[in-house]
Image 1 (spheres, rainbow, N blue to C red):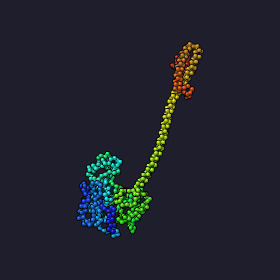
Image 2: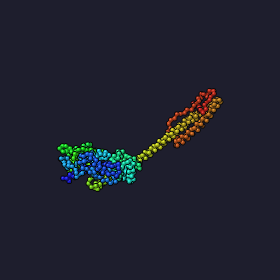
Image 3: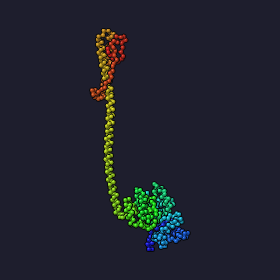
Length: 485
């Protein structure tokens, strides 16, 4: 029974972790400093002196650490005060020491151990922009160490991995200060560098458990998880659930703790693990049954189960198949786009050619209209002159007949002068007719008969009546043929 007692007393996570011990003095020994603090507290508090505690070192790969553990000495542990379960671990005794240590030195950070011995990411500051793909990490790490030294941030350990460079600081307050700013301009880097905390959920209550893979697209999924725990682990209709919360950096988790270690062990029983998987099967395979938060922090979040090689191979095949399918779709879309582009280019070329043809046609029509108008004007002038010429010829014939029959010498002289002037006008009109005909033929470039002319007004030449010849001072305007003689 004593051996069983020791095993349960040392249940996973039933220990305290103290951080930032001796952070101001490099290469200090946190175990010795904590042991000295325990002695001082024991002298001042006799009740705590009866609780056997041990200060244990924190296994670190670095040359220096400011972290250590406080555990109960299982060889001297008092019996449990719980009459219903005398094997219940005495985490209540550690809670008393947690309060006393926190009051002894507020600069120290004391909490329940989050993970197995030597595993703690609370002091990590990660620089994800300096990952393996960014280039050589060793020179970048040296620049970060120089920056930390300039800022008076003592560093216990530094290392690089595929996700970036990590600095493990000595003081938890420095960690909080760096992470609160989000990004930092550091000498030697062209752009601000982001900072992230180590992926670890702090244990707020002893023996906390965690449900991972909680889907966020279901309304009140956390309420359903709480109801399942209340109903499944009720004792005489009284829930054994002591509390729950959701870590701010892990939204797809549900963290809770029970009223006792016995109830915690019941939740972790294989029977209830299978029941959880069955009851929440419809919410997806990613929803993990409850596990010890201490264990998850120790092994890593969402650690795959089963044969990793087989699972990765299946996943890789699925991804390859999906990528090939997407590639085929992209190829088809690219081919369709090229065909549509070619068709569009052809249509644009045709439209451009048509527009050019229409433009040329309109220009040609405009030229033809202008030439036609000029030709009509020239022919109209020619017709007008021809009519005037016909009238002049008639007047000449009339004057000639009058000259033959006139007996008065004076009148014969006047008639002869007028006949001469009319013949000169006839010659002038004939020249004008020739010029108009030549201009018309030049414009239309063809026979006159091919052009349909609109009717044009007739130009009537001024005339002189025969009666006026018998009057004295007979005179005619220059270049005006007689008419109606």
